[in-house]
Image (cartoon, rainbow, N blue to C red; front, side, top):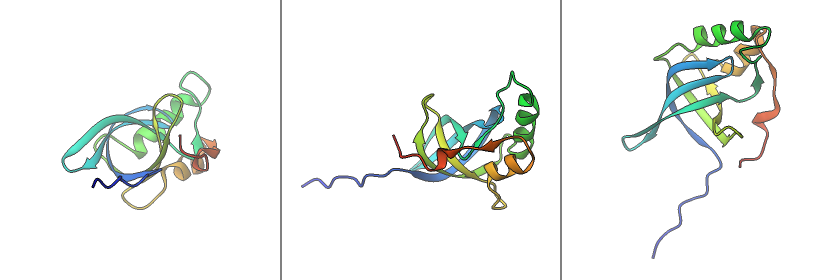
Length: 120
């Protein structure tokens, strides 16, 4: 008799940051456990930062790059994939600070409701 795996609507784990894409998107290696890892883009849940080509976009990107430099390991809690296939994730810095909160606190983003959307 086979046991069906539990249905999960989110994934929690660790991510090592590889590079910044813009003010609210990072490229990372996600540790899935059991020696399995994937490289993917993570969209910071709960915040909307300016796009690169708009006013404030380069500043927001630079802020996120300084906050989450390549090599840093973040805790992730991903709830869904967005329309671009990025994992929308609540990201936590090693010292416990929330990445979205830090982006907004620094004035580089506005609140977004993506933390409350149902999983796809």
